[in-house]
Image 1 (cartoon, rainbow, N blue to C red):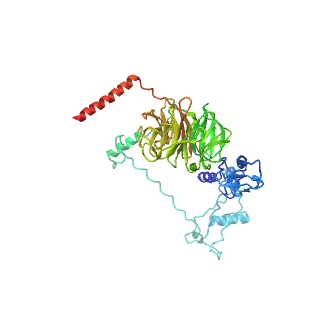
Image 2 (cartoon, rainbow, N blue to C red):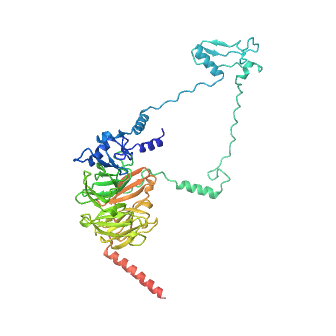
Image 3 (cartoon, rainbow, N blue to C red):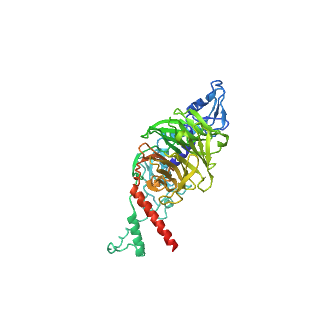
Length: 534
C-alpha cells in the first residue's frame, strides 16, 4: 500500500472528536456519522438528564443534528463494522513483513522440457551429442531420441548443446544458434587538449556561456532551518493525533503566560504552558473560531453552529458558563474576538461585515461598519484587538488595511494598502499590539509579519519569507507574550506550528528629532507652496 493512499485512507477513518483512528466505532442515526465508543461516552455525558436518564437527546458533533439515543444508551447504537474492518486492515498492513518475490519458473522450450523430466523422474537430462545418423524418430515432433543420454546428477541441470551437429540436423529447429562474439570496440579518438577558456560546445555563444556561469554563481546551498533569525521557541505539529494541530485559528495568552489555541478542525481549545508543553484540551459541541481570555481566567470564543449564540464562555474544565446570543446572530459567522476595558467584548462578523460590541453582562452595546471600501466600511474583517488606549484595531482582510476605532465606533485612522513593499499589506489576518501600542500584523498574503507604530508608520518585519519553511506556510495569527515578544501561529500544507520571535521595538523619537522632523516637513510644504505661486 502506497504512503499517499494510506494517508488518505487514515483521514477517512479518523474520529472527529479525538482526531485519532477509530476504536470500536458506533454510528449515530439518522445522520450516520460514526465516532469512537469512548469518545461518545464522554460526549454524551454532557447531555445527560438526571430527571429522565433514559431519554437522552444529543447533537451530532459534525452536522449538529438532534440524535435520540436508544433506551439502552450508547450500547444500543449500531457498530460500524465496515470502518472497523478498514482499521484492522491498516493495522495488519503495518505489521505484515515485506514479502520477497517468488522466483519465476523457467519458460518453455528445451529447458522447460528438462525441468519436466527432472520433476517426473528425479534425473537430469544432459544432451551430449546429436548425430545426423538417426535410427529412430518421434512421430510427434520429429526429434531424434537415439543419442539422448540421461544421467543421474544431484546438482543443477546444465544444458550443453553439441555444436558438431550438421545444419540439416532436426535438432537445429529447437537449438539456439550461438553467434560469434563481437569484436571489441576501438578506443575513442583522443581529443586535442583544450584550455579552461575554450567552450565545450562550439555552437553556444559567448553570451549564453556567460549567462550560464552567472546562474551557477548565484546558486546557494539550501537552508534547512529557515526563518530562524530571532527565533526563541517553537512547538506543535500538524497531524491527526490527539495532541496534534489540524487547523489552528485563534491565539490568546493568560495572565500567567499560558497559551490557548483554538483548532477549527477538531472543535477544540488546546491549553499550552508558556514553554509549549501541552496541559489540557477542551472539546466543544460547536465550531470554535477566535479565542480571548477574561482577567478571571474564563475563556471567550466566537462560536458557529451554536444555535443563536455568537459567543460562548467556558471555564477551564470545558463547561459552558455563559452565552452571548440573539436571533440575528445565528448566521453572523463571527471570526475575531477581543476584550477591552470593563470586560467589553468586541466581535467581528464575516457575514455582515461589521463589528459588535457587548457589555460585560452580554448585552449588545454598539454595532458599526458595513460592506464597502471606505473608512467606516469592512470587507471581511478577520481579526480584532484592543490596545492600551481602549481603541479597537481591526484587520480588514480584503481591503488590505488596518483600521482603528474608538469603543463607541468612531473612526480614528487607517493604514496599509495592497502591495508587497514594506508598509503595504496583502490579506492581513491576525493583529495584536505591544506595550507601546505598536501594531503587529500577520501579513498573510505576503508570507511575513509586519510591525507598525501606533500611527501606522512601518517599523520592519520581525518575520519574513515563511514559504521557505514549507509549502504555502503563512502566518495566520499573532500575539504578544509577557516579555513583549511575538508569538506567531503558522499554517500551511500539512503544516502547523507555533513560534516565538524576539521583538525589539525601535526607540521612540526624542523631542529634538520630532522638532527637526516637524520643521523639515513644514519647510518643504512652505517652499512647495511658494514654488506653486510662481
